[in-house]
Length: 152
Image (cartoon, rainbow, N blue to C red):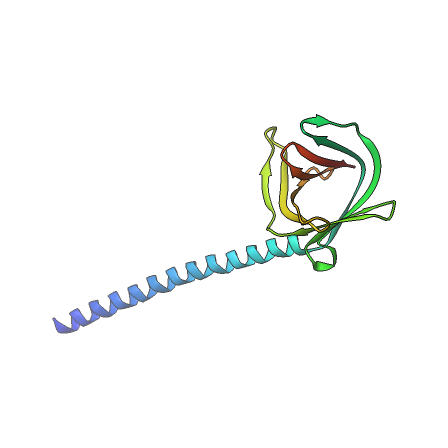
């Protein structure tokens, strides 16, 4: 009877160890996949990329202006600083410093975009930069009812 009982206890112990190993493995697997996903996400947002736009429009206090031709090059994460820099053809630049992480959302009409909070380096004001996934539109949201929109 004692031998049988000892065998049963050993079997239980072995079974418990196996379950613990499986749960530990699953937990470690989830943890590793989460770390890899997070690393990939951070890497994709930390790379420098460039967009060019050829027209601009502004809305202020609910009044939309007219489309105007322009030539602006926007560099995201310039030199790894997190800055978003607008280079205009008249040798002027406008620099925004990223203060948050990008988040994704959709407009009321379902257009997906990424948005990031920034500080305007010229006056320290807070703005949000909205980059649409269709790769043709960029908005600088300055205040309620006031934005500047660039298009390709």
